Image 1 (cartoon, rainbow, N blue to C red):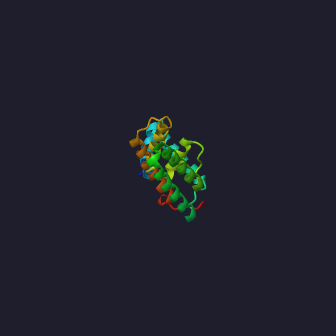
Image 2 (image 1 turned 60 degrees about the vertical axis):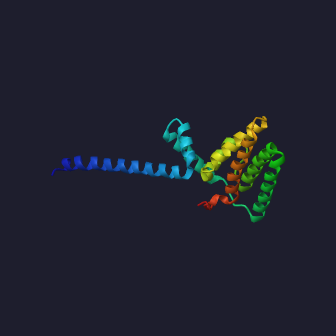
Image 3 (image 1 turned 90 degrees about the horizontal axis):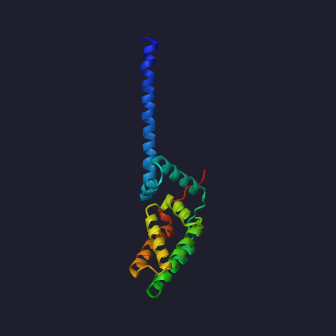
Length: 185
């Protein structure tokens, strides 16, 4: 076989192998993002201009999150937050709108103490999505109802639902979400 014939066989084979390796790599990255972000993966990709843009956004969230100093709570803080949450739940009986507002503030306070920035709701959502993507929809729904209650447009059932939603994220943040924070290399 001549050198030209060998090159005509080897070069296309190498190109095909490289394309397959690239495709597999992209699929593996996509699968990891889907597993890490849960329902937030679909939400982000659907709202982006393209799947690649959505995945780029999710990778940027991971990078930003890795730069945050997220820390577990000391047991004394965990106990204080548990007591505060019990108080908010008791408040719901007589003052449901105020209890929902207090639940929102308590979750924001817990996030802040854990190391999450809490200035902007949309950024909070993005930061939380990295480790708490599966409970993020709870936070989104609770926040929406909190907004309705500010305008006195939320029903008692919606307010009760907001408390349930806030509790889902609150408990996950309180228990560190079952995540062990990776040390920075």
